[in-house]
Image (cartoon, rainbow, N blue to C red; front, side, top):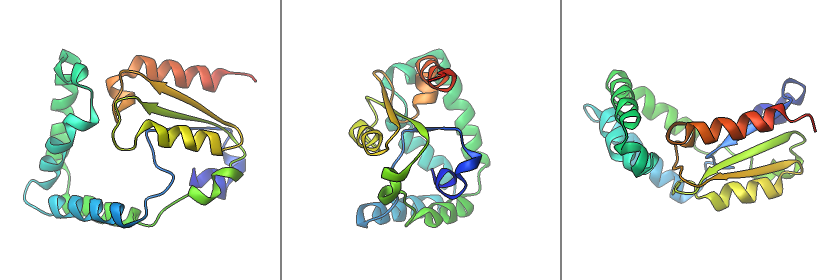
Length: 167
C-alpha cells in the first residue's frame, strides 16, 4: 500500500491479503514485545512458528498431507532464520500505517480475508475495502491468516479474477 501512495505510477492494481491498515498502538507494541522476546530466545523463530501455526492455518489444512508438508517446510525455514534479525524487523514495523490514507487510495484494490483469521479479523479487511474508493472485498470461508497457503485454490482464483478483470 505504501508503494501505491509514494509511487502511484508504479502500481496498476493492488492486492492486500490478511493485513492491517496500521501497525500502531499499545496492543501492537505489546504484541511486538512478545514477538521480539521470543525471537531473541534460543530457537526463538522456531518457537514463534510453532506457537502461531495453529492460529495461522485452518485445522482442516493443518491435518491434511499438504498442510503437514507446508508445516515441515516452514518449520525448516524458521530453524534457519536469525531470531535477532526477525526481532529487529518486527520492531522496525512499529508505527507504520496507511490507515489515514486509505480514502485516497486511487488504485483498484482487492482486500482478501479469511473467515477464520483472528489476526486481523475479516471485519478489518472489509472496513479497509469500504474506505478505499476503488476497494473490493473477498472473504475466503475456510481460510485462516495464511489464506494464500491454507486455501490456495480459492485465494488464487480470487486474485486472478481480480487481476484479469478488464473493468
